[in-house]
Amino acid sequence: MLQPWWSCLSFILLSSVLPCLATGHSFENTAVVRTVELAGSLVHVTTTYAVKALENEASVYTLALAKLQHEKTSWLEAKIKGQSVGLPLEEAGYNAESGVYLYDLQLPKALRTNATTNLVVETVETHATFPWPEQASQKDPQSLKYETDLFVLSPYFTAVQRTKVRSPSPQILSYTTPENLDEFTTEEPVTRSSATIIYGPYHNIVPSSSKEFVTEKQRRITAHYGYDQPVLEVSNLKRTAEISHWGANLNIEDNIHLHNAGPTLKGHFSRLEFQSQSFYGRPSPQMLTGLMLHLPAGVHSVYYYDLIGNVSTSRLRTTPSVQKGSPSTQFSLLELRPRYPLMGGWNYSFTLGWDSPLRDYAGWDQQSGKYIVGVPLMTIIPGAVIDDAEVEIILPEGATDIEYFPPFPALKTDIATHVTYLDTIGRPTISFTYKQLTDKHTGTIFVTYSVPLSAHLKKPLAVAAAFMVIFALGFASKRMDMRIQKK
Image 1: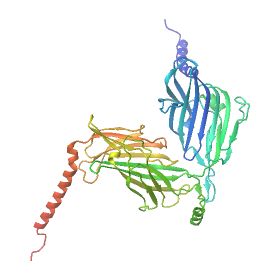
Image 2 (image 1 turned 90 degrees about the vertical axis):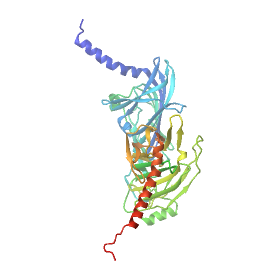
Image 3 (image 1 turned 30 degrees about the vertical axis):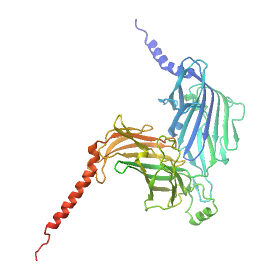
Image 4 (image 1 turned 45 degrees about the vertical axis):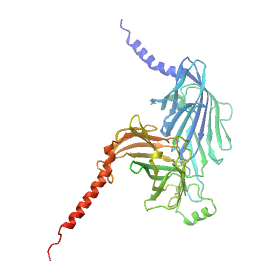
């Protein structure tokens, strides 16, 4: 017998609502503590969830991020407290009505009713701060502003919640004091202790990943703080890694476009003021005078130049190569000084490269008969975000059966051919495209490939053929009479 149309409609609506209700009632947050570590271009946020299961065999916990927070987040990782292995995360989609992004977190073990666990969610926000005031002279201090939401959004009921905003120095100029929070607390809504601003504790927060909560009860908070380091951004990075079996060498070259995102310089740059600040050891906080970069151990033939030419204002302290299997805690230290001090709003483009023994990065798999080479994804510039990055790995000529394993997925991957001197058919080149890289995006791109014996012999045969052609041309030129008129 056919059911009335309204019965079918009610069944469909109930089927669509039940998953949401199940999600909202499967867990409860007994406590949520969010810690915001303020800095320059990168802001690290750690949120700890004390979770209690409300039903048996609960194994999927849902995280919620507001739209603005999601746009600024470049790194998201969840772990069980005290463990180092990240948990599987799957993006559940965007709710256009409430403006919330949801992520499903797979717990390593299903929880029984009233069982508890602690989840630690780490995120890195890029371009989350901005200079205020927007302009500053060479003598002025530098201060930044940071904005975020007061409440941590969650599809579950939260018993108690706190937010700690930590400044790199006690110089906090101002911060937001939220109002009309009698529903959540009877104490002061915000307190300050030295360089830490504490919002909360707030009690009995209903599931907040809804349009009603976001529009009626969510608040925006702002922290205005002093920052005595340059705010650095890498607008573009291109890394080229060339593998040479004949030279047993790995050459890495970085083309870097650096930008100082601090307050723009008010007026003109004064060389006299700069020399005076350097003499008294009180440089302007928004001025970049040098960088300390950690290069791999065993590097040699390091070069550094910009658009004008070679830059000699640098210092390198190398360490010997590290044996395979030993901890890679050793590194070479490069003190890099730009040609001119980089003020707020200024740009500086330069090229940095070095050679390394190929044995430090390559290996041979006897079972598959393939080479395995690990190429570092990038060199960290302290405190800087990399907006656009392209990594090219140039393999030996004749490489076949190519496979690659990046530490995290790239936005785009291409395989092309690179032709250079003494090449015949060119070298396979793998390129990876990334955006918004942070200090958490370190890792190694592993590439496996095979090189047949005929490919190894191509280069010496090409060199021998080139010498034979030159010798034949020289021999023929001696036997030919090139004069227009004989004597």
